[in-house]
Image (cartoon, rainbow, N blue to C red; front, side):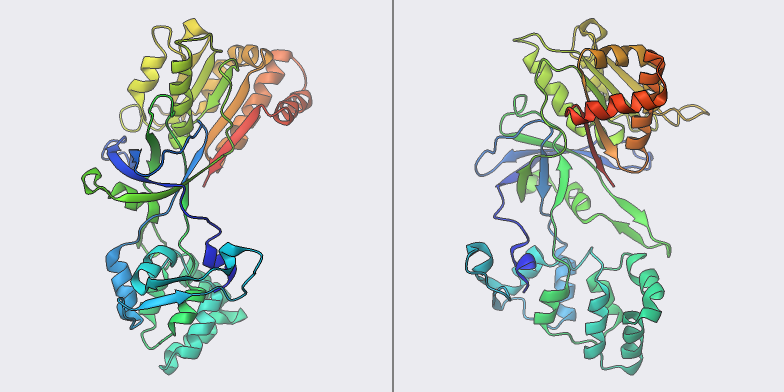
Length: 412
């Protein structure tokens, strides 16, 4: 094995978590499945800050693993020892052997056989081990420059898994050492933490959109990690291996005014921000918080509705009495679509006043158009409120970014 794949680029998990809550936040029929997950520390408690990211190593379907083992004619009960191909003595992690480990366990924890698509070289190696002439010919074509477009349509566009590809070419008998090299490694998935350790000692919360889509040939695909988490029953006591690390959203000081923009599941880290500031607010003076949230419909996917509304009333951290505010854009509840940018423009003066007081901007959510649209809206607001040309507004925003006060965490 190459050292990179052997080590997964990871040390051992920071700790293990146990799910204690699996709650659906979106309504049935909304076209989305958004979940609120709560976990408790099983092993050591890891201290984390708001804005941090949790990496989760998902489990694969036992049915898929068993099918892969059967298809490749492997003995699941055999034990194997795995050594890196190029031992580097100076790095004990990369120089160490893995094993002996049960073959089935090794496949489950390191080889993504059920969600990742194989690379072109996988098809080239398969062609050497195909015994049926028509399969060999097709695999050779897929591996050739001429077959690149057809391979893309068959493989990447349809997101075929390694198992599906092997099942489509039954005459291929690839040795296990080649499979170990060529099957994509099982990777962790990263999620913004949506809780504050101050508010929930011994717990970590996540807000996760359960990913599913249809391929061009109408085959239903789903995200490995989000689907696995959504299928977990808190009563099962499954131990989830996780790693904590810093994301793009540094934890703000209580005295720092905040302008938060988080449509959809982009609200996740800001739930932690508001929880934390609410607790800080009981013992010290805290700066105002403006939060702009967006979703499709008020009735279907207004995530954490009661939470935000409770903090925007009775001198809560999002209340106008505290100099803050909570503004929601429901994009599909009227003929003209309304997004967070429109709500920001409505609060143009308030945003500019907070920026002048030294506020930091935090933006989280989908990486498609939203971050660029929000940046453009800030340009428009600054230009309007200062009555300066757009170029000056751009320079002002760039200076804010350079000063470490404009943060974006976006995901695809």
